[in-house]
Length: 574
Ligand SMILES: Nc1nc2c(c(=O)[nH]1)N[C@H]1C(S)=C(S)[C@@H](COP(=O)(O)O)O[C@H]1N2
Ligand SMILES: [Mo]
Image 1 (cartoon, rainbow, N blue to C red):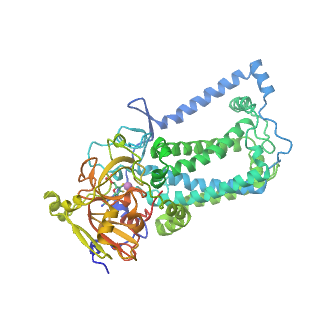
Image 2 (cartoon, rainbow, N blue to C red):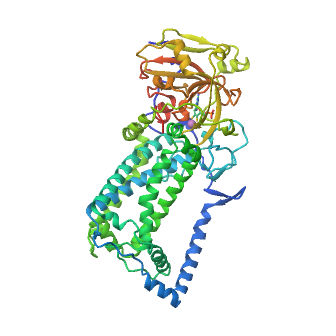
Image 3 (cartoon, rainbow, N blue to C red):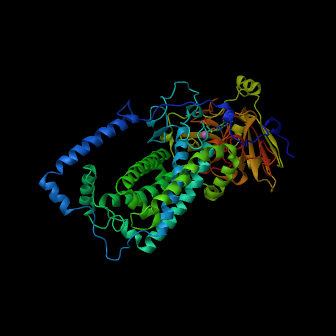
Protein backbone atom coordinates (compact mmCIF):
# COMPACT_ATOMS: atom_id res chain seq x y z
CA UNK A 1 0.00 0.00 0.00
CA UNK A 2 1.70 3.23 -1.09
CA UNK A 3 2.04 5.90 1.59
CA UNK A 4 0.42 9.13 0.66
CA UNK A 5 -2.35 11.57 1.16
CA UNK A 6 -5.25 9.16 1.16
CA UNK A 7 -6.29 10.00 4.71
CA UNK A 8 -7.14 13.51 3.57
CA UNK A 9 -9.51 12.31 0.88
CA UNK A 10 -13.24 12.04 1.19
CA UNK A 11 -14.01 8.33 0.83
CA UNK A 12 -17.40 9.09 -0.57
CA UNK A 13 -18.67 8.86 -4.09
CA UNK A 14 -22.10 10.35 -4.68
CA UNK A 15 -24.80 7.84 -5.58
CA UNK A 16 -27.76 10.18 -5.85
CA UNK A 17 -28.48 13.86 -6.25
CA UNK A 18 -30.25 15.99 -3.69
CA UNK A 19 -30.10 19.41 -2.02
CA UNK A 20 -26.48 18.89 -0.97
CA UNK A 21 -25.48 18.63 -4.64
CA UNK A 22 -22.14 20.26 -5.61
CA UNK A 23 -21.45 21.66 -2.15
CA UNK A 24 -25.11 22.70 -1.74
CA UNK A 25 -24.77 25.12 -4.63
CA UNK A 26 -27.81 27.44 -4.52
CA UNK A 27 -30.05 27.97 -7.55
CA UNK A 28 -29.18 31.04 -9.62
CA UNK A 29 -31.36 31.94 -12.58
CA UNK A 30 -29.23 34.24 -14.72
CA UNK A 31 -31.05 36.48 -17.20
CA UNK A 32 -33.21 35.92 -20.30
CA UNK A 33 -31.05 35.10 -23.34
CA UNK A 34 -29.66 38.14 -25.10
CA UNK A 35 -27.55 38.84 -28.14
CA UNK A 36 -25.09 41.68 -28.54
CA UNK A 37 -25.75 44.29 -31.18
CA UNK A 38 -22.82 46.54 -31.97
CA UNK A 39 -20.21 47.16 -29.31
CA UNK A 40 -22.24 47.13 -26.11
CA UNK A 41 -25.99 47.05 -26.71
CA UNK A 42 -27.82 43.87 -25.84
CA UNK A 43 -31.03 42.63 -27.42
CA UNK A 44 -33.30 40.48 -25.22
CA UNK A 45 -34.38 37.52 -27.37
CA UNK A 46 -37.79 37.35 -25.68
CA UNK A 47 -38.66 40.34 -27.88
CA UNK A 48 -38.60 37.93 -30.81
CA UNK A 49 -41.94 36.55 -29.64
CA UNK A 50 -44.00 39.76 -30.12
CA UNK A 51 -41.82 40.87 -33.05
CA UNK A 52 -42.28 37.50 -34.73
CA UNK A 53 -46.02 37.71 -34.18
CA UNK A 54 -46.25 41.19 -35.69
CA UNK A 55 -44.07 40.14 -38.63
CA UNK A 56 -46.29 37.12 -39.20
CA UNK A 57 -49.46 39.25 -39.23
CA UNK A 58 -47.87 41.81 -41.55
CA UNK A 59 -46.50 39.01 -43.74
CA UNK A 60 -49.94 37.46 -44.05
CA UNK A 61 -51.50 40.80 -44.99
CA UNK A 62 -48.80 41.50 -47.58
CA UNK A 63 -48.98 37.98 -49.02
CA UNK A 64 -52.76 38.15 -49.33
CA UNK A 65 -52.47 41.54 -51.00
CA UNK A 66 -49.90 40.62 -53.59
CA UNK A 67 -51.62 37.37 -54.46
CA UNK A 68 -54.27 39.52 -56.10
CA UNK A 69 -51.73 40.87 -58.57
CA UNK A 70 -51.97 39.23 -62.01
CA UNK A 71 -48.18 38.90 -62.27
CA UNK A 72 -48.04 36.98 -58.97
CA UNK A 73 -50.93 34.78 -60.02
CA UNK A 74 -49.15 33.96 -63.24
CA UNK A 75 -45.98 33.20 -61.27
CA UNK A 76 -47.82 30.82 -58.93
CA UNK A 77 -49.53 29.17 -61.91
CA UNK A 78 -46.15 28.65 -63.55
CA UNK A 79 -44.51 27.43 -60.32
CA UNK A 80 -47.28 25.81 -58.30
CA UNK A 81 -44.84 24.38 -55.76
CA UNK A 82 -43.27 21.09 -56.75
CA UNK A 83 -40.43 20.22 -59.06
CA UNK A 84 -40.90 17.16 -61.22
CA UNK A 85 -39.32 13.96 -59.93
CA UNK A 86 -37.48 11.33 -61.98
CA UNK A 87 -39.85 8.58 -63.18
CA UNK A 88 -38.22 5.96 -60.97
CA UNK A 89 -38.60 7.96 -57.72
CA UNK A 90 -40.36 5.87 -55.04
CA UNK A 91 -43.93 6.69 -54.04
CA UNK A 92 -45.05 6.86 -50.41
CA UNK A 93 -43.28 6.17 -47.14
CA UNK A 94 -41.89 2.75 -46.20
CA UNK A 95 -42.27 1.69 -42.56
CA UNK A 96 -38.57 2.26 -41.78
CA UNK A 97 -39.00 5.96 -42.43
CA UNK A 98 -41.68 6.03 -39.73
CA UNK A 99 -39.47 4.21 -37.25
CA UNK A 100 -36.46 6.35 -37.96
CA UNK A 101 -38.53 9.50 -37.75
CA UNK A 102 -39.81 8.50 -34.34
CA UNK A 103 -36.40 7.48 -32.96
CA UNK A 104 -34.91 10.68 -34.30
CA UNK A 105 -37.44 12.84 -32.51
CA UNK A 106 -37.21 10.78 -29.32
CA UNK A 107 -33.41 11.10 -29.20
CA UNK A 108 -33.50 14.80 -30.10
CA UNK A 109 -35.50 15.62 -26.97
CA UNK A 110 -32.75 14.37 -24.67
CA UNK A 111 -30.00 15.80 -26.85
CA UNK A 112 -31.50 19.28 -26.94
CA UNK A 113 -32.45 19.39 -23.26
CA UNK A 114 -29.04 18.18 -22.10
CA UNK A 115 -27.44 20.58 -24.59
CA UNK A 116 -29.21 23.48 -22.90
CA UNK A 117 -27.98 22.19 -19.55
CA UNK A 118 -24.41 22.16 -20.83
CA UNK A 119 -24.81 25.72 -22.13
CA UNK A 120 -26.22 26.80 -18.75
CA UNK A 121 -22.95 25.75 -17.10
CA UNK A 122 -21.18 28.52 -19.00
CA UNK A 123 -24.08 30.63 -20.25
CA UNK A 124 -22.10 32.69 -22.76
CA UNK A 125 -21.08 32.24 -26.40
CA UNK A 126 -18.09 33.71 -28.21
CA UNK A 127 -16.50 33.75 -31.65
CA UNK A 128 -12.98 33.85 -30.23
CA UNK A 129 -11.05 31.31 -28.19
CA UNK A 130 -10.20 34.13 -25.76
CA UNK A 131 -13.48 33.74 -23.93
CA UNK A 132 -13.02 36.69 -21.61
CA UNK A 133 -15.46 39.28 -20.26
CA UNK A 134 -16.92 41.57 -22.91
CA UNK A 135 -16.15 39.12 -25.69
CA UNK A 136 -19.43 37.20 -25.61
CA UNK A 137 -21.98 37.73 -28.38
CA UNK A 138 -24.67 35.80 -26.50
CA UNK A 139 -25.33 35.49 -22.79
CA UNK A 140 -27.90 34.26 -20.30
CA UNK A 141 -26.00 35.83 -17.44
CA UNK A 142 -25.11 39.33 -16.22
CA UNK A 143 -21.80 40.85 -17.37
CA UNK A 144 -18.81 39.18 -15.68
CA UNK A 145 -18.36 40.75 -12.20
CA UNK A 146 -15.14 42.67 -11.54
CA UNK A 147 -13.91 40.27 -8.79
CA UNK A 148 -10.62 38.95 -10.22
CA UNK A 149 -11.14 35.56 -8.53
CA UNK A 150 -14.72 35.11 -9.82
CA UNK A 151 -14.95 31.50 -11.04
CA UNK A 152 -16.66 30.00 -14.06
CA UNK A 153 -18.47 27.69 -11.67
CA UNK A 154 -20.01 30.73 -9.92
CA UNK A 155 -21.13 31.90 -13.36
CA UNK A 156 -23.24 28.78 -14.04
CA UNK A 157 -27.02 29.15 -13.99
CA UNK A 158 -30.11 27.11 -13.17
CA UNK A 159 -32.68 26.40 -15.89
CA UNK A 160 -36.44 26.31 -15.24
CA UNK A 161 -37.62 22.87 -14.07
CA UNK A 162 -38.30 20.39 -16.87
CA UNK A 163 -36.26 22.37 -19.38
CA UNK A 164 -32.65 21.38 -18.79
CA UNK A 165 -31.63 17.75 -18.37
CA UNK A 166 -31.13 16.88 -15.57
CA UNK A 167 -31.99 20.42 -14.43
CA UNK A 168 -30.19 21.44 -11.23
CA UNK A 169 -27.46 24.05 -11.45
CA UNK A 170 -24.00 22.70 -12.38
CA UNK A 171 -25.18 19.21 -13.39
CA UNK A 172 -23.04 19.38 -16.51
CA UNK A 173 -21.37 16.02 -15.78
CA UNK A 174 -24.64 14.12 -16.04
CA UNK A 175 -25.94 16.35 -18.83
CA UNK A 176 -22.89 15.31 -20.82
CA UNK A 177 -23.57 11.59 -20.33
CA UNK A 178 -27.06 12.17 -21.67
CA UNK A 179 -25.87 14.39 -24.48
CA UNK A 180 -22.91 12.32 -25.67
CA UNK A 181 -24.59 8.97 -24.99
CA UNK A 182 -27.84 9.71 -26.81
CA UNK A 183 -25.82 11.44 -29.53
CA UNK A 184 -24.17 8.14 -30.44
CA UNK A 185 -27.62 6.54 -30.76
CA UNK A 186 -28.85 9.50 -32.81
CA UNK A 187 -25.81 9.27 -35.10
CA UNK A 188 -26.28 5.51 -35.52
CA UNK A 189 -29.91 6.12 -36.38
CA UNK A 190 -28.79 8.78 -38.85
CA UNK A 191 -26.24 6.45 -40.40
CA UNK A 192 -28.88 3.77 -40.93
CA UNK A 193 -31.12 6.48 -42.40
CA UNK A 194 -28.46 7.56 -44.92
CA UNK A 195 -27.79 3.96 -45.95
CA UNK A 196 -31.47 3.16 -46.44
CA UNK A 197 -32.11 6.51 -48.13
CA UNK A 198 -29.51 5.84 -50.80
CA UNK A 199 -30.13 2.12 -51.20
CA UNK A 200 -33.89 2.51 -51.70
CA UNK A 201 -33.89 5.57 -53.95
CA UNK A 202 -35.72 7.59 -51.31
CA UNK A 203 -32.96 10.18 -51.53
CA UNK A 204 -34.45 11.33 -54.85
CA UNK A 205 -37.31 12.80 -52.83
CA UNK A 206 -35.04 14.61 -50.37
CA UNK A 207 -32.44 16.27 -52.59
CA UNK A 208 -33.37 19.24 -54.80
CA UNK A 209 -32.51 18.18 -58.35
CA UNK A 210 -33.67 21.24 -60.33
CA UNK A 211 -33.09 24.95 -59.90
CA UNK A 212 -36.84 25.52 -60.18
CA UNK A 213 -36.95 24.49 -56.51
CA UNK A 214 -36.17 28.15 -55.77
CA UNK A 215 -39.14 29.81 -57.56
CA UNK A 216 -41.27 26.89 -56.38
CA UNK A 217 -40.35 27.47 -52.76
CA UNK A 218 -40.97 31.23 -53.08
CA UNK A 219 -44.36 30.40 -54.54
CA UNK A 220 -45.11 27.95 -51.72
CA UNK A 221 -44.02 30.46 -49.09
CA UNK A 222 -46.45 33.00 -50.58
CA UNK A 223 -49.22 30.42 -50.60
CA UNK A 224 -48.62 29.41 -46.97
CA UNK A 225 -48.36 33.03 -45.83
CA UNK A 226 -51.55 34.06 -47.59
CA UNK A 227 -53.24 31.17 -45.76
CA UNK A 228 -54.44 29.80 -49.07
CA UNK A 229 -52.35 26.70 -48.83
CA UNK A 230 -50.69 24.77 -51.61
CA UNK A 231 -52.09 21.40 -52.66
CA UNK A 232 -50.54 18.70 -50.42
CA UNK A 233 -48.53 16.20 -52.44
CA UNK A 234 -46.19 14.99 -49.70
CA UNK A 235 -47.00 11.34 -50.34
CA UNK A 236 -45.43 11.51 -53.79
CA UNK A 237 -43.47 14.75 -53.99
CA UNK A 238 -42.53 17.40 -51.41
CA UNK A 239 -43.08 21.03 -52.31
CA UNK A 240 -40.07 23.30 -52.80
CA UNK A 241 -40.07 24.68 -49.27
CA UNK A 242 -40.34 21.25 -47.68
CA UNK A 243 -37.58 19.98 -49.93
CA UNK A 244 -35.19 22.76 -48.97
CA UNK A 245 -36.01 22.51 -45.24
CA UNK A 246 -35.63 18.72 -45.16
CA UNK A 247 -32.48 18.83 -47.25
CA UNK A 248 -30.84 21.37 -44.93
CA UNK A 249 -31.89 19.40 -41.85
CA UNK A 250 -30.71 16.00 -43.05
CA UNK A 251 -27.65 16.88 -45.10
CA UNK A 252 -26.33 20.11 -43.56
CA UNK A 253 -27.56 20.62 -39.99
CA UNK A 254 -27.11 17.03 -38.80
CA UNK A 255 -23.51 16.61 -40.08
CA UNK A 256 -22.69 20.10 -38.80
CA UNK A 257 -23.93 19.11 -35.34
CA UNK A 258 -21.42 16.25 -35.32
CA UNK A 259 -18.51 18.24 -36.74
CA UNK A 260 -18.99 21.23 -34.42
CA UNK A 261 -19.39 18.82 -31.50
CA UNK A 262 -16.03 17.23 -32.27
CA UNK A 263 -14.59 20.74 -32.66
CA UNK A 264 -14.90 21.16 -28.90
CA UNK A 265 -12.60 18.22 -28.07
CA UNK A 266 -9.26 19.20 -26.50
CA UNK A 267 -7.50 16.09 -27.84
CA UNK A 268 -8.71 16.56 -31.43
CA UNK A 269 -7.90 20.23 -31.44
CA UNK A 270 -4.23 19.58 -30.60
CA UNK A 271 -4.13 17.15 -33.53
CA UNK A 272 -6.07 18.97 -36.27
CA UNK A 273 -4.22 22.23 -35.84
CA UNK A 274 -5.06 24.05 -39.00
CA UNK A 275 -8.78 23.63 -38.63
CA UNK A 276 -8.82 24.26 -34.88
CA UNK A 277 -6.76 27.41 -35.33
CA UNK A 278 -9.28 28.86 -37.78
CA UNK A 279 -12.42 27.41 -36.24
CA UNK A 280 -11.67 27.56 -32.54
CA UNK A 281 -13.65 25.71 -29.91
CA UNK A 282 -15.75 28.85 -29.46
CA UNK A 283 -16.66 29.01 -33.16
CA UNK A 284 -17.57 25.32 -32.95
CA UNK A 285 -19.60 25.94 -29.82
CA UNK A 286 -21.43 28.97 -31.27
CA UNK A 287 -22.19 27.08 -34.50
CA UNK A 288 -23.30 24.05 -32.47
CA UNK A 289 -25.75 26.38 -30.71
CA UNK A 290 -26.99 27.84 -34.02
CA UNK A 291 -27.53 24.30 -35.36
CA UNK A 292 -29.69 23.67 -32.28
CA UNK A 293 -31.64 26.87 -33.10
CA UNK A 294 -32.22 25.57 -36.63
CA UNK A 295 -33.50 22.25 -35.29
CA UNK A 296 -35.75 23.98 -32.74
CA UNK A 297 -37.20 26.34 -35.36
CA UNK A 298 -37.60 23.48 -37.81
CA UNK A 299 -39.44 21.38 -35.21
CA UNK A 300 -41.86 24.22 -34.37
CA UNK A 301 -42.69 25.07 -38.00
CA UNK A 302 -42.75 21.44 -39.13
CA UNK A 303 -45.13 20.32 -36.38
CA UNK A 304 -47.38 23.37 -36.89
CA UNK A 305 -47.69 22.75 -40.61
CA UNK A 306 -48.14 18.97 -40.27
CA UNK A 307 -51.05 19.58 -37.94
CA UNK A 308 -52.48 22.56 -39.85
CA UNK A 309 -52.37 21.19 -43.39
CA UNK A 310 -54.39 17.98 -43.30
CA UNK A 311 -53.29 16.45 -40.00
CA UNK A 312 -54.89 13.00 -40.41
CA UNK A 313 -53.51 12.50 -43.88
CA UNK A 314 -50.05 13.74 -42.88
CA UNK A 315 -49.95 11.56 -39.77
CA UNK A 316 -50.98 8.54 -41.84
CA UNK A 317 -48.04 9.13 -44.15
CA UNK A 318 -45.40 9.11 -41.44
CA UNK A 319 -46.96 6.88 -38.78
CA UNK A 320 -49.05 4.35 -40.73
CA UNK A 321 -47.30 4.33 -44.14
CA UNK A 322 -50.61 4.95 -45.93
CA UNK A 323 -52.16 7.75 -47.95
CA UNK A 324 -55.65 7.81 -46.45
CA UNK A 325 -57.83 9.95 -44.20
CA UNK A 326 -58.31 7.23 -41.55
CA UNK A 327 -57.44 7.68 -37.86
CA UNK A 328 -54.78 4.91 -37.91
CA UNK A 329 -51.80 7.27 -38.13
CA UNK A 330 -53.24 9.58 -35.51
CA UNK A 331 -53.49 6.80 -32.92
CA UNK A 332 -49.98 5.54 -33.56
CA UNK A 333 -48.79 9.14 -33.32
CA UNK A 334 -50.71 9.61 -30.05
CA UNK A 335 -49.15 6.46 -28.57
CA UNK A 336 -45.69 7.64 -29.62
CA UNK A 337 -46.37 10.99 -27.93
CA UNK A 338 -47.16 9.15 -24.69
CA UNK A 339 -43.70 7.55 -24.92
CA UNK A 340 -42.17 10.97 -25.55
CA UNK A 341 -43.94 12.63 -22.63
CA UNK A 342 -43.11 9.78 -20.24
CA UNK A 343 -39.47 9.94 -21.37
CA UNK A 344 -39.41 13.71 -20.93
CA UNK A 345 -40.93 13.64 -17.45
CA UNK A 346 -39.02 10.59 -16.16
CA UNK A 347 -35.55 11.58 -17.33
CA UNK A 348 -34.80 14.06 -14.54
CA UNK A 349 -36.00 12.06 -11.49
CA UNK A 350 -34.36 8.94 -12.95
CA UNK A 351 -31.08 10.81 -13.28
CA UNK A 352 -31.26 12.11 -9.69
CA UNK A 353 -32.05 8.66 -8.36
CA UNK A 354 -29.59 6.61 -10.47
CA UNK A 355 -26.87 8.99 -11.62
CA UNK A 356 -24.18 6.29 -11.76
CA UNK A 357 -26.39 4.21 -14.02
CA UNK A 358 -26.89 7.17 -16.36
CA UNK A 359 -23.13 7.64 -16.34
CA UNK A 360 -22.41 3.95 -17.02
CA UNK A 361 -24.80 3.81 -19.96
CA UNK A 362 -23.46 7.09 -21.33
CA UNK A 363 -19.89 5.86 -20.97
CA UNK A 364 -20.69 2.56 -22.65
CA UNK A 365 -21.91 4.55 -25.65
CA UNK A 366 -19.34 7.36 -25.97
CA UNK A 367 -16.43 5.87 -24.00
CA UNK A 368 -14.83 4.05 -26.95
CA UNK A 369 -14.49 7.34 -28.87
CA UNK A 370 -13.17 9.13 -25.78
CA UNK A 371 -10.55 6.43 -25.20
CA UNK A 372 -9.56 6.47 -28.86
CA UNK A 373 -8.89 10.23 -28.85
CA UNK A 374 -6.72 9.86 -25.74
CA UNK A 375 -4.02 8.25 -27.89
CA UNK A 376 -3.32 11.58 -29.55
CA UNK A 377 0.11 12.73 -28.37
CA UNK A 378 0.64 16.12 -30.03
CA UNK A 379 3.81 18.20 -30.03
CA UNK A 380 4.01 21.79 -28.81
CA UNK A 381 4.06 24.66 -31.30
CA UNK A 382 0.41 25.09 -32.18
CA UNK A 383 0.30 28.57 -30.66
CA UNK A 384 2.76 31.42 -30.30
CA UNK A 385 3.01 34.24 -27.76
CA UNK A 386 0.68 36.44 -29.74
CA UNK A 387 -2.08 33.84 -29.24
CA UNK A 388 -2.01 34.13 -25.44
CA UNK A 389 -5.40 35.11 -24.04
CA UNK A 390 -5.61 38.41 -22.20
CA UNK A 391 -8.12 36.87 -19.79
CA UNK A 392 -8.09 33.34 -18.41
CA UNK A 393 -11.06 32.26 -16.32
CA UNK A 394 -10.52 30.97 -12.82
CA UNK A 395 -12.26 27.83 -11.72
CA UNK A 396 -12.75 25.44 -8.86
CA UNK A 397 -12.54 25.78 -5.11
CA UNK A 398 -9.63 27.78 -3.70
CA UNK A 399 -7.37 26.32 -1.00
CA UNK A 400 -8.27 27.43 2.51
CA UNK A 401 -6.22 25.13 4.72
CA UNK A 402 -3.81 26.65 7.31
CA UNK A 403 -1.13 24.37 5.84
CA UNK A 404 -1.44 26.07 2.45
CA UNK A 405 -1.82 29.51 3.99
CA UNK A 406 1.47 29.12 5.91
CA UNK A 407 3.32 28.01 2.80
CA UNK A 408 1.90 30.87 0.79
CA UNK A 409 2.80 33.41 3.48
CA UNK A 410 6.36 32.09 3.33
CA UNK A 411 6.42 32.48 -0.44
CA UNK A 412 6.52 28.67 -0.73
CA UNK A 413 10.10 28.50 0.57
CA UNK A 414 9.03 25.51 2.71
CA UNK A 415 7.08 23.87 -0.10
CA UNK A 416 7.99 20.27 -0.90
CA UNK A 417 6.44 18.31 -3.73
CA UNK A 418 6.21 14.74 -2.51
CA UNK A 419 6.41 12.13 -5.26
CA UNK A 420 5.81 8.64 -3.93
CA UNK A 421 4.00 5.37 -4.45
CA UNK A 422 5.19 2.38 -6.45
CA UNK A 423 8.47 3.94 -7.50
CA UNK A 424 12.12 2.99 -7.17
CA UNK A 425 13.19 6.45 -6.07
CA UNK A 426 10.60 8.50 -4.15
CA UNK A 427 11.58 12.18 -3.98
CA UNK A 428 10.71 15.43 -2.24
CA UNK A 429 11.44 18.48 -4.33
CA UNK A 430 11.38 22.12 -3.31
CA UNK A 431 10.76 24.86 -5.85
CA UNK A 432 14.46 25.56 -6.41
CA UNK A 433 15.06 21.91 -7.18
CA UNK A 434 12.07 21.87 -9.51
CA UNK A 435 13.38 24.94 -11.31
CA UNK A 436 16.77 23.30 -11.75
CA UNK A 437 15.26 20.34 -13.60
CA UNK A 438 15.23 20.64 -17.44
CA UNK A 439 12.83 23.46 -18.30
CA UNK A 440 9.76 22.71 -20.36
CA UNK A 441 7.54 25.32 -21.96
CA UNK A 442 4.39 25.15 -24.03
CA UNK A 443 1.71 27.50 -25.29
CA UNK A 444 -1.52 25.59 -25.28
CA UNK A 445 -5.26 26.04 -25.11
CA UNK A 446 -7.29 25.12 -22.06
CA UNK A 447 -10.72 23.50 -22.53
CA UNK A 448 -12.93 23.61 -19.45
CA UNK A 449 -15.73 21.07 -19.34
CA UNK A 450 -18.08 24.03 -18.96
CA UNK A 451 -17.18 25.33 -22.40
CA UNK A 452 -14.85 28.31 -21.86
CA UNK A 453 -11.32 28.32 -23.24
CA UNK A 454 -8.11 30.30 -23.14
CA UNK A 455 -4.54 30.11 -24.38
CA UNK A 456 -1.63 30.45 -21.97
CA UNK A 457 2.08 29.84 -21.87
CA UNK A 458 3.08 27.31 -19.25
CA UNK A 459 6.60 26.96 -17.91
CA UNK A 460 7.81 24.15 -15.69
CA UNK A 461 8.88 20.53 -15.82
CA UNK A 462 7.79 17.87 -18.26
CA UNK A 463 6.12 14.97 -16.46
CA UNK A 464 8.52 12.69 -18.33
CA UNK A 465 11.35 14.27 -16.33
CA UNK A 466 9.59 13.34 -13.08
CA UNK A 467 8.91 9.83 -14.34
CA UNK A 468 12.60 9.41 -15.25
CA UNK A 469 13.57 10.68 -11.82
CA UNK A 470 11.39 8.43 -9.68
CA UNK A 471 11.33 5.32 -11.93
CA UNK A 472 7.85 3.85 -11.45
CA UNK A 473 7.45 0.06 -11.25
CA UNK A 474 6.26 -1.64 -14.43
CA UNK A 475 2.85 -2.39 -12.90
CA UNK A 476 1.99 1.27 -12.32
CA UNK A 477 -1.09 2.21 -14.36
CA UNK A 478 -2.27 5.45 -12.76
CA UNK A 479 -0.74 8.59 -11.35
CA UNK A 480 -2.64 10.46 -8.67
CA UNK A 481 -2.25 14.21 -8.23
CA UNK A 482 -3.23 15.59 -4.81
CA UNK A 483 -4.14 19.20 -4.10
CA UNK A 484 -3.83 21.43 -1.05
CA UNK A 485 -7.39 22.55 -1.77
CA UNK A 486 -10.58 20.80 -0.76
CA UNK A 487 -13.23 19.95 -3.29
CA UNK A 488 -16.72 21.40 -2.89
CA UNK A 489 -18.03 18.44 -0.83
CA UNK A 490 -15.04 18.28 1.53
CA UNK A 491 -11.89 16.15 1.36
CA UNK A 492 -8.97 17.24 -0.79
CA UNK A 493 -9.18 17.55 -4.58
CA UNK A 494 -7.35 14.85 -6.50
CA UNK A 495 -7.27 13.30 -9.95
CA UNK A 496 -6.02 10.06 -11.50
CA UNK A 497 -4.16 10.20 -14.82
CA UNK A 498 -3.19 7.23 -17.01
CA UNK A 499 0.54 6.51 -16.83
CA UNK A 500 0.93 6.58 -20.66
CA UNK A 501 -0.14 10.19 -20.77
CA UNK A 502 2.64 11.16 -18.37
CA UNK A 503 5.04 10.65 -21.28
CA UNK A 504 3.10 12.82 -23.71
CA UNK A 505 4.79 15.94 -25.10
CA UNK A 506 2.12 18.18 -23.61
CA UNK A 507 1.95 16.79 -20.07
CA UNK A 508 3.79 18.91 -17.53
CA UNK A 509 3.91 20.44 -14.09
CA UNK A 510 3.69 24.22 -14.43
CA UNK A 511 5.17 26.71 -11.95
CA UNK A 512 5.06 29.64 -14.41
CA UNK A 513 2.19 31.04 -16.43
CA UNK A 514 2.73 33.60 -19.19
CA UNK A 515 6.34 34.13 -18.08
CA UNK A 516 5.42 34.93 -14.50
CA UNK A 517 5.27 32.84 -11.37
CA UNK A 518 2.01 30.93 -11.25
CA UNK A 519 -0.56 32.98 -9.33
CA UNK A 520 -2.62 31.84 -6.36
CA UNK A 521 -5.79 31.66 -8.45
CA UNK A 522 -4.25 29.55 -11.19
CA UNK A 523 -2.69 26.98 -8.86
CA UNK A 524 0.46 28.28 -7.10
CA UNK A 525 2.97 26.88 -6.60
CA UNK A 526 2.41 23.97 -9.00
CA UNK A 527 -0.31 22.68 -11.30
CA UNK A 528 -0.76 19.99 -13.88
CA UNK A 529 -1.21 20.39 -17.64
CA UNK A 530 -2.36 17.44 -19.75
CA UNK A 531 -3.70 18.77 -23.00
CA UNK A 532 -5.62 15.72 -24.21
CA UNK A 533 -7.98 16.14 -21.26
CA UNK A 534 -10.57 18.64 -20.14
CA UNK A 535 -9.60 21.24 -17.54
CA UNK A 536 -11.02 19.56 -14.46
CA UNK A 537 -8.35 16.83 -14.72
CA UNK A 538 -5.59 19.42 -14.29
CA UNK A 539 -5.14 19.62 -10.56
CA UNK A 540 -4.07 23.01 -9.17
CA UNK A 541 -2.14 23.67 -5.93
CA UNK A 542 -0.44 20.28 -6.17
CA UNK A 543 1.11 18.95 -2.98
CA UNK A 544 1.88 15.43 -3.96
CA UNK A 545 2.00 12.84 -6.71
CA UNK A 546 1.57 9.13 -6.19
CA UNK A 547 2.13 6.26 -8.64
CA UNK A 548 -0.36 3.43 -8.17
CA UNK A 549 -1.68 0.27 -9.79
CA UNK A 550 -5.27 1.36 -9.80
CA UNK A 551 -7.50 3.92 -8.15
CA UNK A 552 -10.02 1.56 -6.60
CA UNK A 553 -8.65 2.34 -3.11
CA UNK A 554 -8.39 6.07 -3.61
CA UNK A 555 -11.04 8.59 -2.53
CA UNK A 556 -14.44 7.56 -3.76
CA UNK A 557 -12.74 5.14 -6.20
CA UNK A 558 -14.04 6.86 -9.34
CA UNK A 559 -10.67 8.19 -10.51
CA UNK A 560 -10.96 11.80 -9.41
CA UNK A 561 -12.75 14.26 -7.19
CA UNK A 562 -15.03 15.53 -9.92
CA UNK A 563 -16.04 12.00 -10.84
CA UNK A 564 -16.58 10.93 -7.22
CA UNK A 565 -18.80 13.92 -6.58
CA UNK A 566 -20.04 15.41 -9.85
CA UNK A 567 -20.05 12.53 -12.36
CA UNK A 568 -17.58 14.21 -14.73
CA UNK A 569 -15.97 10.92 -15.81
CA UNK A 570 -12.33 9.94 -15.34
CA UNK A 571 -11.14 10.29 -18.95
CA UNK A 572 -12.47 13.16 -20.95
CA UNK A 573 -10.78 13.80 -24.26
CA UNK A 574 -14.04 15.14 -25.65
N1 LIG B 1 -7.43 21.63 -6.73
C1 LIG B 1 -8.26 21.91 -7.73
N2 LIG B 1 -7.79 21.89 -8.99
C2 LIG B 1 -8.61 22.20 -10.03
C3 LIG B 1 -9.97 22.53 -9.81
C4 LIG B 1 -10.43 22.53 -8.48
O1 LIG B 1 -11.61 22.79 -8.20
N3 LIG B 1 -9.55 22.22 -7.46
N4 LIG B 1 -10.77 22.85 -10.89
C5 LIG B 1 -10.36 22.37 -12.20
C6 LIG B 1 -11.11 22.96 -13.29
S1 LIG B 1 -12.74 22.51 -13.47
C7 LIG B 1 -10.51 23.76 -14.24
S2 LIG B 1 -11.34 24.28 -15.62
C8 LIG B 1 -9.15 24.24 -14.05
C9 LIG B 1 -9.16 25.74 -14.05
O2 LIG B 1 -7.88 26.28 -13.98
P1 LIG B 1 -7.71 27.85 -13.90
O3 LIG B 1 -8.44 28.33 -12.67
O4 LIG B 1 -6.27 28.12 -13.87
O5 LIG B 1 -8.36 28.41 -15.13
O6 LIG B 1 -8.57 23.80 -12.83
C10 LIG B 1 -8.88 22.48 -12.45
N5 LIG B 1 -8.10 22.16 -11.29
MO1 LIG C 1 -13.39 23.11 -15.67
